[in-house]
Length: 341
Ligand code: NAI
Ligand code: MG
Image 1 (cartoon, rainbow, N blue to C red):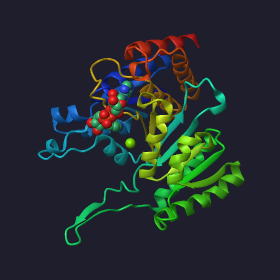
Image 2 (cartoon, rainbow, N blue to C red):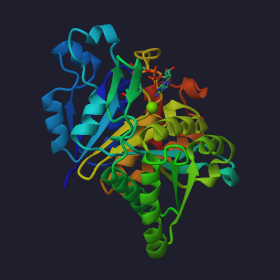
Image 3 (tube, rainbow, N blue to C red):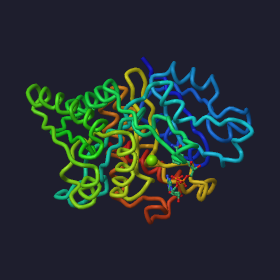
């Protein structure tokens, strides 16, 4: 069966890196690509940042490849309501796990190899969307929702991820010394799963406070294997950790639920370089490699990652990494490597 991929290029450099990624995927295997629109330009054109048709196709496909979208300025959304496409997709498809590999591919010194995964809860926490201002008290309030169901499914996802990807350890990151009820619940559930996965799969489980973790990530990233954490902590730690990789041009991600998977580079639409043909396609290409793994094309997933590794080793890189190649030229190099393997 040929996998059906819903392709959403979006805005800015999304329209540059995704076509190159599709060109590379065509080199690797047979896919049916179905193109749909979303984003700011789509909003300006049709009044909707994520049309129903896009959601419908996304639900009919085996996976979604997403570029990046621009967020309009606040005054532009006063007249017409703007729905964030990526938040809408996460919600509609219940993509509760945000998976971000922190793997340094251009590392010649294997003794201090950086290779861990951050798994972030993607639907609740401090991003539960419940925020208000109490006029009387002159107090702005954000609610941080940590549900038993939401915690269980993300923690289980993290342990299962460790089993599937032959990882040895899962670390729960929290602040349960202060957030005793919310993170207390998260940590308690983690500790229940920890027993089971230690006994059945010999996977270690441990936990660290989030503030200390922010320091450990910089000082000794080798101590991590799989990290599981709540929404906001995961958002911040994963951006911090992607700094270890050499920038946004190299950072891929996956948004995964029980029925759908959406794959996107971590970066945005990069208006400062859009249209110049110099965007680094590697973050999008590595996101596609994660998509291949999800589609159970593990060998092809690995081949694609290896090709990227070769291209980085040869310093065939775009300006963000200190090179002078264009987006298309880097993709050509990746295709050359694929043909060699
Ligand atoms: P950004 O990620 O677009 O750019 C930040 C910096 O990194 C810029 O200097 C950019 O040139 C550089 N950069 C990013 N990706 C690159 C690549 N592949 N190759 C070379 N350089 C790259 O973040 P920024 O500037 O904060 O946001 C721009 C727009 O993108 C905003 O409208 C923002 O809301 C949106 N955005 C969308 C995201 C998404 O669609 N998931 C995620 C982050 C931001
Ligand atoms: Mg972020």
